[in-house]
Length: 371
Image 1 (cartoon, rainbow, N blue to C red):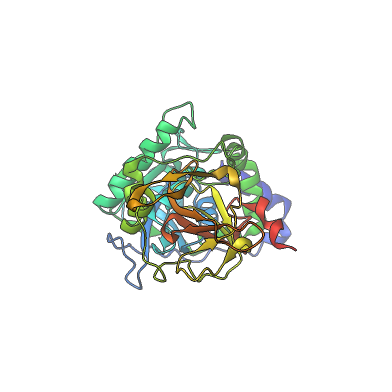
Image 2: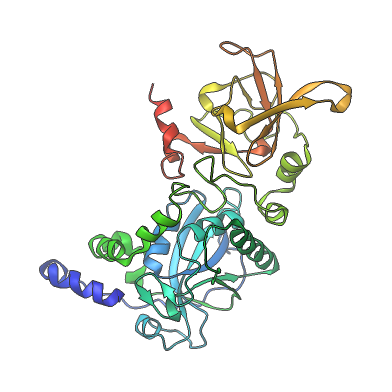
């Protein structure tokens, strides 16, 4: 079907496209190790139907450094696009996502993946039919396997879809780069790509399936109804040990040695567990304590305050409503206009820069920085 759509656009714009010739395929076998030998990047190998679309979607994600389209899962060496698309090689169209684990975790990569496919379709994706267009997660090691299983289980338990999750979790073996003309196809052949995507049914399905979460990943909703706390198994894989200790076990990070205490960028701070918006840089001030401090929440409905009698004192603890994360405490010694100081652990927060608010699903807060 993909070929049929491409034929249509070639006919419509034949004069423009007549000179188009694909370059030779680069059939390079990828390493089975998860780490990129050129740095500290890690690799996720994912099949989500048409690799043009999956590559395009992942290249917009913060923390993703590059995405390569290719083929995996079959037994034939050096498969070609013609062989794979015909369904005779045993491979699926797939991508390898190179990501910086300091900026985005594997569980968050999977969140993005779920958000951009139909995981209930066992026979292809959207207009592209056949096993070669099926969805799959190819794990590189035991930790990725455990995380993938927990993430899939979490999606099933969410009730998001009324059909079983058909996405397979398969051991990674070999990956072959697709032909060069397929790489960054959405940029090189933007007209053809847009025509194909608009007629594939992908975006229409995603808009319907995730209409209450405004382009957010599976566990990071953009409306209060969509925010949720993943299972503890998922969180143990998603969070660093410090983040887990602070957010889930009510710990406290060291002052002056945390990620955001001196951050002066414009943007918002969201819950590390649920993604719900909590604070804005517009309300952040230097309290001299060594922890991020704010005069008020960005959305008061997302903060729960209650009395904390630990450490032989009475304080007001602040927790996130949907993620149930321990954030910190509230003190009556802040500056105007509220006179309050929300003293918050960086480990319970994730910062979303102003310029990324729209793409990350927090566009409703972008206007607050215009004045």
